Picture 1 (cartoon, rainbow, N blue to C red):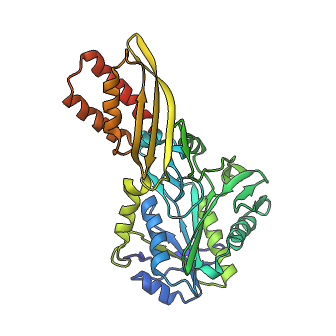
Picture 2: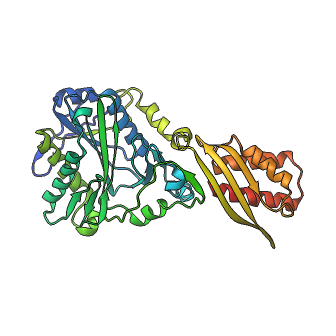
Picture 3: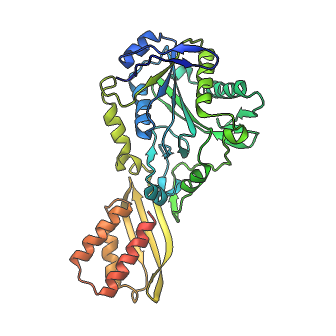
Amino acid sequence: MIIRTFNMCVKTYGCLRFIRPQSTLTTVFEEGGTAGLVLKSTSTNIYENLAFEDWIHQHVDLENRSILFLWRNAPAVVIGRHQNPWQECNLRQLREWGIPLARRRSGGGTVFHDLGNINMTFFTSKRKYDRHRNLSIVTSALKKLRPGLDVHATDRFDILLNGHFKISGTAAKLGRKDAYHHCTLLCAADKILLSAVLKSTCQGITSNATPSVPSQVKNLMDEDPTLDCDMIMEALASQYNLEFGLKGPVTLVDPTDELSMPGIRNMALELQTWEWVYGRTPKFSVSTCFEVSCETSSTNVTLNMDVKNGIIETCTIELPHDWLPTAICKDLSTLLVGSKFCPTETAVVTAAMLRTNRLSNEFENKMHILCESVAAVM
């Protein structure tokens, strides 16, 4: 069941409305009329919510209907369709902390999500696509909640607080007939975690991928502690209904319901694959130097790689032959070509090489140290 059954009333910013039991998404659209709907996700999984966006975009006729989709996620980092994750975020920290990385199908920059961040997706036909109008809904809702808030949209389609702090960023996807515009809204996000995971540690990358533009951010709750996410989402829904002349309540949707939305499970699974998250990265090169040490011996290493679709196309590893024989470095470089630009795969390649080559304990230790340093670039 995509629509959960409720016997309780829901407050929608100044009035009480009942959510009627529904059976399928189709029923919601039919009974919701042609004008529009406000949907709110019951999931906090980034891949499920992104898949729901894609499913609506692909399967729902938006020619005469507008939809606002409200959703929040557990901690996650989301990059734009044309971005390089190695340049955009601290992948090592994400792996260590178990925070998922997702690539959305829209453009734009990298954002951090957690339950203190509200996501809004405005679905319309392509001809009615209007980001200015959508952002006006957001700023109007906030000003109605707290008239003293200084919030306004910029020419870059961001929303600034007090003329300086970014509280919302924008991205969009335009199809042949339909479009969606989605944006974030910082209410009570973990700014320490946000700062830690959006700081890349990869050095020496050259790429034509779309870079993010760093901005100072601030939570709305830092400005007014009486605000919270639920209150803001109610205000957004109310302002959206007012803007489009709608009267319906917010409808809760389960973005995992395969029965109501055939194919959505596979859509969510595809968004989690290495081939989509990393393999869709525009071609890039790596040229960097780093130091390696083994007991009392240390040296500098020069690493050069070309990476396409997340796969290493060329690789050269250079270091003094008296620290590690040149032939061993060449063998490692050759074996890395064709493998994923990924620390796990580099570890597998290294282990396979050591199994098939008899090395002294000293050289084997140095090989492990070298490969760990190469993997750290990834």
